[in-house]
Structures are given as structure tokens and as C-alpha cells.
Amino acid sequence: MDTSRRPAHLAGEELSNRHVVLLGDGMDDVYDVLVPFVVEGFDGGDRAVHLVDPALREEHLERLAAGGIDVAAATASRQLDIRTWDESYLLGGGFDPRRQIGFLRKRLAEGRGLGFPATRLIGSLDWAADVPDVMADVLAYEMLVEALVRDRPDVIVCTYDLRRHGARAVADVLGVHAGAVVGGVSRTLRVRDRESARERLLTAAAQLFHDVGIHATGVDALIAAAGVAKATFYRHFPSKDDLVVAWLRDPRARWFDDVRAQVDEYALPPAEAIPRLFDAVAEWLESTDYRGCPYLNTSVEITDPTHPARQVVSDYLQEIEDYLSGLVEAGGYRDPQKLGAELQTILSGSISLAMARRSTASAVRARDVALALLNAAERD
Image (cartoon, helix red, strand yellow):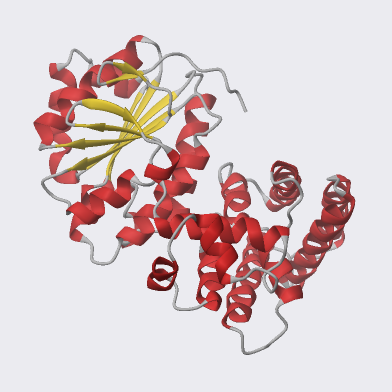
């Protein structure tokens, strides 16, 4: 990943964080901050991707034009890409955090492919104010964005109109961003400010479950590591079992989502997608210091068939197998379910060996075995 970064300014301050939330008191307040940021990007040769309310698309273009941007020329050169909510966040009629992260990856990769040094993506999330019970998914998405841009030259600004969102939603949104602009003033948020008690408990669980195991980690240890009161723990999680389930469902534990996004980003045929998938797994193993798959690790430690985590593990492993089966089915291979299951067996084995040997060599060998399996398989 190219980590070279050129200066980018928002609200008159140079950005030290590449994932920023912009909270404005009405749209005029939002655009007073956004337009200079967009103009700076155009002047520097960056690409602009804007995700906007379909009802305000024309107004958005007018505001850009008033800021001195030749909208027609920028669109023709593909330096400017405007997408409405139904073409981005709400594609297919609903919001899916993992699908949206895949969308972002494609847009950032597209910008690089077109020769732009960086992409400045601005997304209005005001649609969330009108969708019941969606904020948990929005916050999960924002955390994935935080990880996505950590080592990139790109900038992602998420905008919220304070007139449309309640105080609780605003506080939660601030909690998952490293940088913020509130009332036209830039702020860098401290780690403790950014993480809610629930997030701190999930972070503590991820660390302790890996270091000492699920069974050996008590509630008191989790409370101490997260820096919360016991009452706070039980307000969020009625039992430790509930925390285990929440940890497994947390986007940070769903490691295959990121691998899948890297494969889907390039829309490759199976003969190329499968090797790319194993390469992505090798990169993930190395980047996480060979912690391995939380789901496989949990299945080894929790053997009680009635434990609620067992179903979560089973569902996620089946999700991976279904994805692999879908890849090979798209390539016209016979018996894709059988082939998908075989590929998952190879994948799981390579992860276990990588953990034991602290080396990506097994994932590299597994890639070659998987490709040989595809080459030997029959097609319709």
C-alpha cells in the first residue's frame, strides 16, 4: 500500500486523520467546510467521489460550481464521481456495512487505476436518520472505514446534519472517528473519547480471548482491561456468553469480510480470484501476527453444543464455504458445493499451520494446491 500522503485541509486545519466526521448545523454549515476541501483536492489533482441525497444532487452540483469547479469537465474526465444514496449506501434497498466497504474499496482502487494520486470521498449519512434501528450497522461500517484508510493516502469525510440526528446518535458517531469537525472547528479525538464502553469491552475481549483463552478469561479481567464498572458490563452484556457472541459478530472479528472485499474489488475470474484470495489470507495472517481465525479458535475451545457461540461459528464458516462455492459456480465448474467445501478445507488447514509455524508459507502452498484443484475440476 502506498502510504505517501500529501497535505489535506479541512476547516482550515491540516488533517492528521484520514477518516473524519463533519457535523454541521444545517446544509449551509456543512458546505461552508466541504467546498474549500473539495477545491483543494481538485487543485492538487485528487479524485472526488461524493455520495449524496438523490433529492439534493442538483443542489450539490450547483454548490460545487459556485465554488469554482467545472462540473461538466470534471465529470467527463472522471475526476468527479457523484453517486446518490440508492447507488451507494442503499444499493439494493437496504444498508449492508460489508457491501458498502466493498463499494469504497472499488472506488479507491478505481481512482488509483485512473492515475489519481488520492481520492477524497465525501459521504452524506443523513439517510440513517430515516431508517429505524440502523445505527448499529452504521457504527460498524464507520469502524471498518477507520481501518480501511489507516495506511492510505485517501481521505474519507462522513457528513451528518445535526438537525436530523439525535444526541445519542451524534455521540456514538463521534465515538468511532479519530477526527471530527464540529461547528466548523477541527478536533482530534482521544482514544478514550472515541471508544464507547461497549467498544472497550469488545476490544478487551478480543485481546484476552486470544492471549489466555475464552474459558480462562473472567468477567473481572474483562472489566479491568476495559476500564468500566461491573454494572456497565452487565448493562451491555447480560452474561459473558453474550459478550463472546457479540465479539464473534463484531466486524473486527469477521476477518474474511476484508479478504472477500479485496477479491471482489477486481471482479476476477475464479482461476485468478482463488489465488488472490489465498494471497489476501497470507497478508491478513501476517498483519495480525498469526492470531488465526477467531471462529476456528472458538470452535476448538467451546465444545458444548448448546453454547450460543457454536451457532455463530457454524454460520460464519458456512458463509465462507458458500462464498467459495459461489466463486467456482460462476466459473462454470461442476458440483460447486463440493469444490467450495474442498477449498475451505484447504484454507482452514493453511490458517492452522500458519498459526503453528508463524509463517505464511502454508497459505502460499495452499494457494498452489487450490489452483491445481481448480485446474483438475470439470466444467459444464
